[in-house]
Amino acid sequence: MTALMVSKGNSSAASYVDQKRISTTQYFSHTVTFGKQPAYTELLNLWKECKQSDWDGYKALPVQEETLNNALVFIYALPLGFPLPSFGVEPDGHITMEWYCHPRWLLSVSISPDKKLYYAALFDNDIIKGNENFYGDISRTITTLIERVKSQKNS
Amino acid sequence: MLNPLNVPPVHNDETLARYVLQSNHFRSDGTAKGDVFMPHPYQDLSVTRHREATEEEIWEVGHGVAQNIGKALYGRFDIQAKDFLIDSLKVIPDPTDDNPNHAIIIGWPEAKQDQKSIAQQIAANLSNNPSSCIKKILF
Image (cartoon, rainbow over all chains, first blue to last red; front, side, top):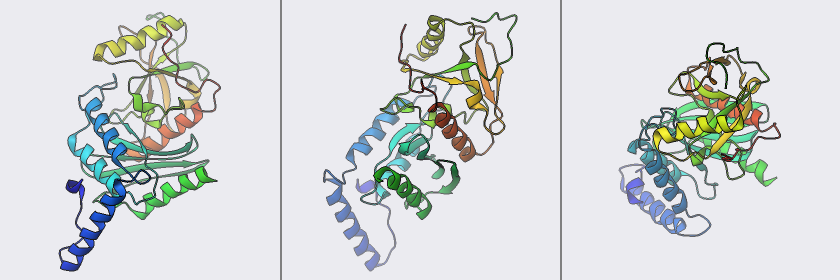
């Protein structure tokens, strides 16, 4: 997983914080509760299934290796304690990550090979959508939407 | 199947099939993910009309699609034409040589996030129907 690390700075203090973050994350990644390994494995299998074009019978584009890497980094960046999404693929070859409570209470985030996120959420009649760049950190917008799905699930 | 020489327009109360060839296009409870209704990067979404087709014929089309790409057919979602009519979407006949019942959903917005949102709403509309879950292969 070291390959997925994104450095936060160049100073010795930043390096120290990075190292601490890495060791803590690696520790929790090996626990049953916080482990992300099943998600990494699922993403890899999904990529194998959809790396050829026309994987859906409707002329879909292949999932590129860059898209897989970006999705792996996204999952790595997901804060501890946040639920893992289920994965899918869209016909343009983007990988989708879905946080789901029921068909009218969910969030879907697509990730592209060029580090762009496209998201759409449905909370009954409340529709939220947008796009943003992804440079290794998940924005407050996205984490807030994940928390909103999660809150309904827990209520 | 429909007579290729006399294909009628699609009525709102017609049932349309969308074939599923990807295991991640439906959830473990059998409900549809929005991903299965995404057209991007294309401008339209393919469906097959039930009108004047037997169950066997509808499955035959799905098997044909799967066979063409050498993949498994997981099933299909049956959805009312009116459930696609969100924003500027329209359903129009688009008969092909091997499928006179072929139709397409057109009028999708340009922006990907707008398409995602509409696809999500289509899947949500589908969930209101009693037979909203994926139909497994019968023939």
